[in-house]
Every structure is written in C-alpha cells, then in structure tokens.
Image (cartoon, rainbow, N blue to C red):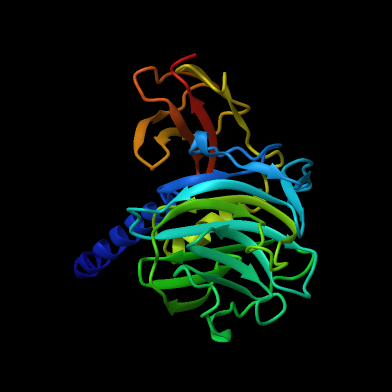
Length: 318
C-alpha cells in the first residue's frame, strides 16, 4: 500500500498542477490591439489607435445585442494602423458572419504585409498570408472547415516567424511554412485589397491582434472565452460583478451580485502581469491602483470551477 502511494502521489501532484496551470490561461497576454465593438470602433488596448468608420453600420452581435458588431457591404470598412516591428510572432482572432459566398472577401488587411480572406479558392474556406504576398498561397493552405454563410464563426491565424496556423471555432485546421514579414502600415477591417472588389460582405466582431503566437490551447481558450457561457445547474442566474467608477482615477469598488464560497479576485495588466490578488470576503471590495500607470486592466473573480473577467480603464489624470 505504501509503495502504491509513493507511485501515485507524484502523479496526483502533477495532475493538480496541470489543472491549475490550465485554469490560469490568460487570453489577454500579449494583446496589442483589441476592437471589441461596443457601439464604436475604439481600440480598448491601444487607446490612441482606434479605427475610423467608412460606411460600416453597427449591427447586432452573436449574442443578439444591438450595436455590438459592424456590418460591411463590400465597400465599407474600418481603418486604423498596426505595427508588428519587433514582434516574435503574431496572432489575430475575430468573429465573422458572412452574407456572400460567390467571390473573394477580405476579412482583415494589414496593408503591405498580411491579409486574411475567405472564398479565395473554395466557397467558405478561410486563408491567411503573413509573408506580404497573398497570392502565392496554394489551395492546400485553405481551412478544411467551411465558414457557413449566415452563421457566426470564430477564426484565428497565428505565425511564430516561420509557420502559419489557421483555426476555425478553436480547432487547428491547417499549418504551412511562411516567413513573417514585420512592418507598420494601415489596418483595414473588412477593407478590400485596392480596387479588386474583395471587400467583406457580412458582420465582424471582437477583432484581436496579439504580438505573439498563441498556442493551440490558448486559441481554444480564447474561443471559449468569447462564446456564450452555459451556466450549469443548479445555478440559475449567471454570476455578475461590476466595477465602479469605470474608467477610474485609481480609487474604485468591485461590487458582486452574490458571494459564493471560496471566492477570490485577481487584478492584472494588459500583458498578463499580476497586480493584486486576494480572497473576497464581502460583496463590495474597495481597491486602490493610484500607484499604477494609466491603461487597460482586467479583474478576474473566481470560485469553484468558474471564472469571470471584466475590463477596467485606469486614467490617473482624472
């Protein structure tokens, strides 16, 4: 029996550590640009790099919430900037709902460097080029799954400097060798490549750009984080917490609608560094971040096997 315990104990410890590591996956680490589309085209990470709107119209998102996504008609687009100089890798993710399968459509265009599109060779197939030459990719570089017309689909593409990987709904679909070109230029969401008629027709939401390659587990976690959370029985009402005021000058409160047992909070910055943490002992927590730099922060509340995250904007000039 003792010998059995000696064998099993290291295995149990390893499993517990692995489970804990998975629970701590931070889908915001390395995020350099984020366009969540909350009634506007603001960049929630790089505040000075919001997009201008050129004909795109606000519409409902994948949850049915009005003014939380943009609709594109093939000529409309969002225009901003990007800078990938110094990146070790890159990843972009987005939710899209197409309305047309009959021609090539650009989802996101990093002018003079990268492009992601559908319907290039095969209707509904997704493809990305990170080597500044979108026309040298063969048919084999398309996704295997189809982006279904009229249905919200999560797409992602990463490159670690030499390999491009495509994902549809969190699943790795394709990988192929491709050199990452690092550049700075205009960023176009839904924008066609020059005047080739390749503008996007449909809806786009929650566009994220990372200055690193997200691995397969992180891509899946990002997909799960941005999908409607199913609340298991016996919990009937989803857990909710708020941050007041938000934006804040540094003095604020976290207010919970309920207090489950063994509840903890974590505050971390946009690159995933932990700032504060502790046990939640009441439904209202007073916080002070006046000693930290202005920017975007995230507050995570965890209990049992559940985790909830809200963003907070800190502006010490208030």
